[in-house]
Length: 124
Image 1 (cartoon, rainbow, N blue to C red):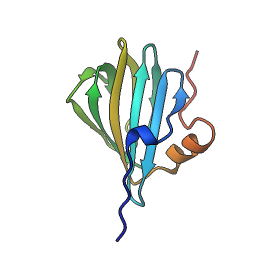
Image 2: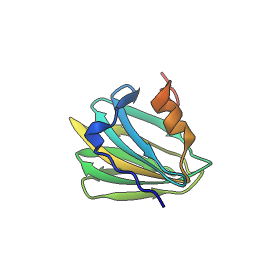
Image 3: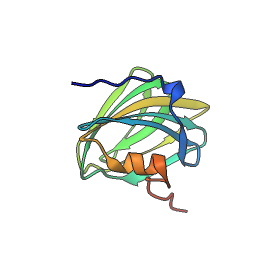
């Protein structure tokens, strides 16, 4: 068995959408991202047909919609998004950070990390 560790500050951060920054790590069965939203930022509606997603808000506040239900998430809030369920969000003010966990791990996060963005384009 092998374990790996790192500090978030030692890992590269990529801007995957305007004002939406990702620091990504992954194992064989799950992926973990630190996300930082700098206002204004929008996350277009999308789904993950290949993975379940959980989020833990670590600072700030964001507006988030899951399956048509809109709420404001703030520090300490947790949300679980089943596979295939549409979700979207946008910043409210300042900066917000949260941790995302994907199971199983999503190669798209690493592709976005290594190359171009892996999020859908914002619709004008």
